[in-house]
Length: 339
Image (tube, rainbow, N blue to C red; front, side, top):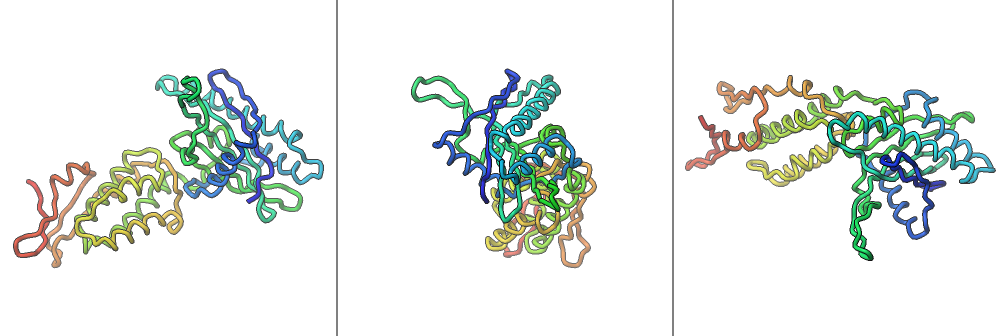
């Protein structure tokens, strides 16, 4: 992936201004690493432009068109970079007005833009990097600046662009968010989701439930516990980052009946579900779509005449106190339920 052009603008919402910054040579390595990390990040949600004539899409297409021209130089493309940064400032002002009553503030940060090319295909990267506070070792004053860890990002978008018969077309856009920020994709970038939140919630939970179902017979307690945890997470968390959810629920879980190799296989399979089962890595959970799937009946004896029914979500700590897997003196495993 070759970086053709890049720019940085400080977006200062408090002072209502945008400042373009030159990129010094010793900072180039950080920016190049940042661009590489963002362009290869798969934890994204798929969007498409509302139309091919929205403001940011038009500005991006003009930048690509200018790049194809023999006279393309960064100074001529600069006004487009500036216009995109100023649009973000306007959207952040409007978004800040809506969240003032919640005593929340949009952080000051930098907007990184880059035009990338690979095998005659173009990508346009836009990323908002929230500044972090640090103590300057020279004068011991509190200052703001770029975070040293590029994984602490923020809000990004990668436009996938193509040239078709001299026309530049923005196809899809891969968006990453570190939380709920609808102004980023709906307002600033004017994008629409390729898949709805409802569809993502249903597809994700269905895929997870089916994969967990494969351990139900050999490890019923682990199945009940993990399924209950996913139900609770999807009902409580509005913004879902799929990998974070798997890390939170599965990586920290200690299996009771499931063998270690089977547990590792389960974890690997869960990580791969979004690509295999057609849902986004990021979406906003719709609890009502999960509610209909909470009720579950478990057969706890081979002849099917004894069943355990769970009608709703149970907090994990309470679940561990109420239902336990125990081994009797006869070496047979039993389900113990507190009454």
